[in-house]
Image 1 (spheres, rainbow, N blue to C red):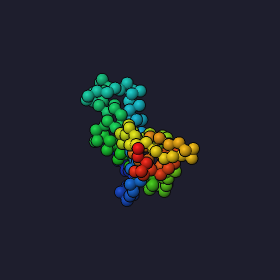
Image 2: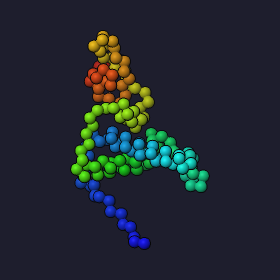
Image 3: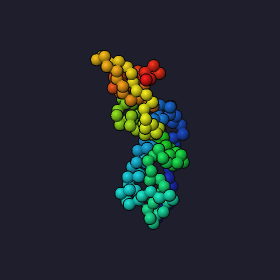
Length: 152
């Protein structure tokens, strides 16, 4: 058998700006979810320490509850994926904040409760009252730009 020598593409020259942090965290969380789902289908469950015979691992928890070391492993994979996409000549453009995107961001930063509720008066004269979570720039319901004056 021929010896395999891994030779990944050098990504050290690809610089990502801070706009990719949310994307990186979303990819990292989803990678963990894919991994956990596969393990679950194979019969793995949560255990305080890894046991290959009993198929138990302490990593069978939501991404937000993983130790930072495990999260960093997933983040590195996500970052390298984004860098590879860029190095191959593709652009990544965030066109809109979809409901799925907002859910991922809330989960990634552990924001189960809104920061505040929008109090912008809409065209119908009613107060919006949409829950506003960290990372929102515009209210998803009424579209107003969010500032500290929107807080209730």
